[in-house]
Image (cartoon, rainbow, N blue to C red; front, top):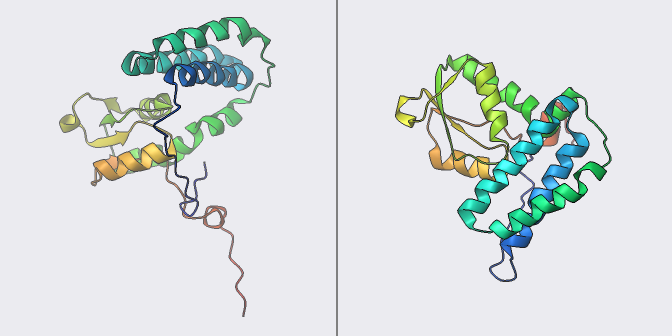
Length: 194
């Protein structure tokens, strides 16, 4: 997973012209289509269910229930028509960020000997964080005070970094670490003029 801190994206939501029903309808449909098309067969059903559950929770919280229902209707009408281009498990792990989380979060958990962790500020692909915690044998506790580590519960770069700043502290762990530059990540020496 590559996120160069030098490349800044500002996602400013406009106040007017936003129809949450339309937005949620498309999020349900489009994200489920992605899973239908690309998830390995062993993951496909659960991946689609995670999408549907995530946007149901958002519909209940934000109240665009009509858009959510329309999105489900769109899925019923179109899901089976999506062309399959199944990824290998390794490709899918990279696509979802699971590979990066195993490398970064898994290493941090093992290095610190974490046995109990709390996830905070859950967001997109919380399941990735939860899977790495389970693979590392870490018990997830509900109360931050009971945890040896606080793990930000999203794979989305902006929300993850913002939550990391809010929680701060020695106990706070991110699922993956953004690199300062692509060349640093690749280990490439920059050429400079003599």
